[in-house]
Picture 1 (tube, one colour):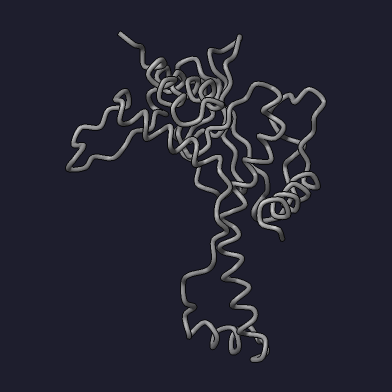
Picture 2 (spheres, rainbow, N blue to C red; picture 1 turned 120 degrees about the vertical axis):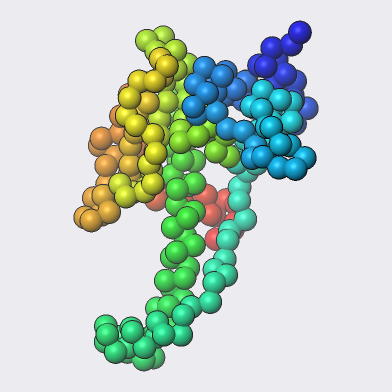
Length: 226
């Protein structure tokens, strides 16, 4: 009988053989740490979802592949509240002829903020991949962004956030032999960055704010022609 890891490898071999090895390690990590395992939600067609089912493994494989793809650049879709203009003019003294531009800028900024987290993970992975780290793209592991097999612990894991006030549900603890480290990029109240406090030894490679911004610029030039 095939093991779960063997099933996972066979499924990913069909979809993208280049990702089979990291995907199998993600499945192994999830089996060792079931509290971080991700499975489909209950539905009429799947009333009792199981992490180990072929259906769930295939779903995770697709999520993993799609999570690594370059996303379409989202555009603002919500309409601004008309009362917002009055508050900006009467309460904050924004000149009437600037209100429309500032509101539109805010709408774009709100969408852009959602993209920064994904770009942050891509930038970090551009360095971590040379140190055997696996990017858990597509949210295929709950609350963890990167994992690596470890000699000291069975697994090392890293959770990254863009800001210190981002939602953070995992504790900084060793669970089931897994060393979970957490890091955030910016302090929300001051804007100070925390690259100097990045918790991993990168063997001479350095992550910096300048490097991150250059990565973003190159990313949009390469994939969007901007």
